[in-house]
Image (cartoon, rainbow, N blue to C red; front, side, top):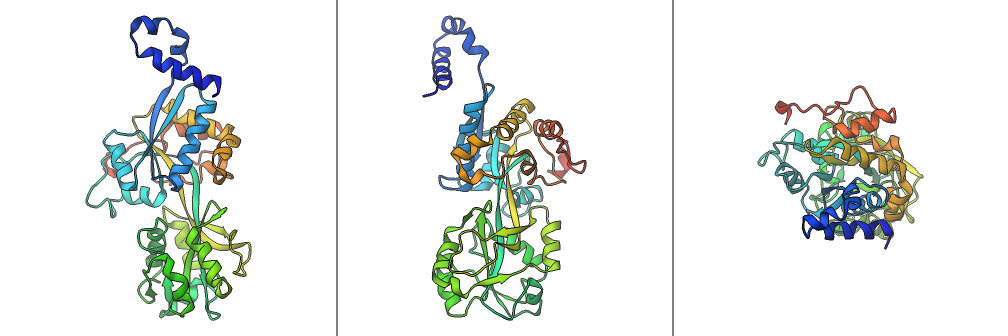
Length: 348
């Protein structure tokens, strides 16, 4: 065990036995750290893996902050835990943040009184369209209607944003939308029941498990469907999505270019307004300056440890935690369109 970690453990143990012991470990007290409880998804989820890596990296490189991970399966419950003061930071995708700010389901029935302030990105879920039909070249061709689309299984974190974009571009109503479980998609494609499917990967590096299975079973039937101008504009203007060239790493049987025009939903660390700005600033600094440690713990973190991508997830209309604002300003990354931590009660 590293010497510093051992010493911290000893300090915590001795400090609990009374004032005499505390007086005898003044050196330990000078090295005491602020403990931050961070809410993430269940083991195996993206936020869980990113959270474990964040805790590991901060433990290695910060003398002032300690991160403790708390698992909460439902993103809504994570935000409620911040609202109730049970945790102080949380990892969620931007669709969850957008819906919480605007009281959109599932936050229409349980409004979050204090929506946490934005921090920095820990990656994104990239998506693009594939089709089995030679007569389709881009999403613009779907405007005629009558096509069978699969925006992924309801309940998947990518589904809400995909449905949102389809509705905003008037592609939802005129086409047939399939809602089957992902394991049934290869058979449905093979039978000609699904002609267009939204596939996804994490951080441009890891294809979703069901997409790998899709490729193995019917990959030879799949070809790229580019994003048309209207769909691209929707990904640009939606608060929770960004346009991207989605990476196709992981597809083997499907004959695809290296990237396909698509969209992504960034994920980020959010902080309670009650968190000391020095804490969030320190966490952001550690990630930016010690990205190699983060990637050691979480290979999928590669590409989101440099300062500039850390700001990718920021939604301009929502407040950023003051400590992260200070970090962005120090690194000359601040966009004047971003809100610098102001908290308007009427917007919550």
